[in-house]
Length: 110
Length: 377
Image 1: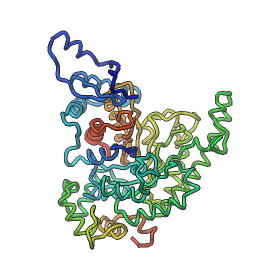
Image 2: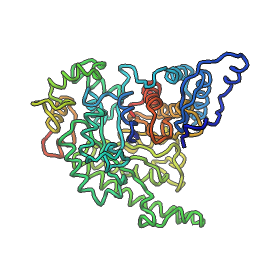
Image 3: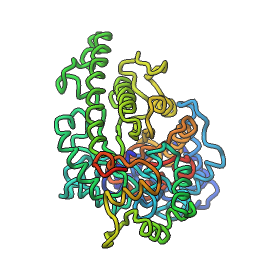
Image 4: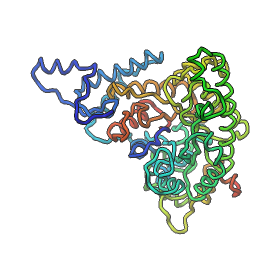
């Protein structure tokens, strides 16, 4: 937080210490942290267990691309036939067993 | 201001230069930033002295433990790494949260790229590959957003249809906007010099009511539009009343929407006592240090706390980072909720310069994750 400054500030943090967002499992760990109030280490363990991967592989692009494709959790690139947006978030909510607010609020059910 | 043409004024830890002159050999020097972004060089011993002085300053002022010898040596390794850009070791990654959309021309702070905010968030998700995103208005205050909240809801919904990552809605509590000439309440800054202390306090209390109401209204509507979380950014900018108004908003929102994730990020290091007599659950707010602010924010029901430790421009980058780390580490130890430190321009050890230097910023990132054991930035 507090890294919304432009000109390379946020991207430096994203790549020096960030988890990689939708390219890996960064968005998933963030969602678990937000919805369950877990510290990052605990949130990583939770996500790894739900996805059936080792914690170390949560930031492994090669493994996570396969996992995300298999579970249809949304990919960083727009592959035809793969879930995007709300559809991907519905799959994330089911897989991680967490509430995703927009699914409730935008009428797609949990 | 950073000057590339003139040498930076000498700092305190210059003992090695004298030693170098006396022994007649040249000690290896490392590139090191100053608090204003100026690029200088220091020996390993000079850098270590700066780290020790920085953590001692935080320990003294915050009444918190300094970094241990092992942590200082770990930080010294990060500082003296030959690589220009450093990163965490595999497995030590943490979550990145932000404030604002960053890339668009209609957002604050602006990079001026002519794309709308919803496109900006998609770029953020798939080009920057950050872990979370935020939607914010260019007029980044809850009061200002109140008048256009319906369009903010529309933008939020459009973003949520097209993205996968969690999206916060963020703005500032900004109590100053409720005082004249910008708002309805007489200005405490004008009353205080006249000696009207009780009147100034009453004005701040009235402003707090308006601010809490606006925060609950706007944040509630954005959460109902589907936002994954709410960010109260630069909380406490107008002092203890600003902070208390936010804590009350957090309480009300959590009662109304028990699942809402709320992030409370601070404006500065020590909470200013502009009112001086405000308490939250028995804790006097004026003068609270970052780790004490963390405990209060947790007790209000917030999900994530963001400390802001100020960078001193007249000190070195190692001094500032060691100091910021000492405070950040104390926050992590003080609460059970995740801690995401503010590490933007001029806070968290990051030098105060408009154009950030990745050599310094990446070292802040690594140190906060691996030594501070933070949950995110």
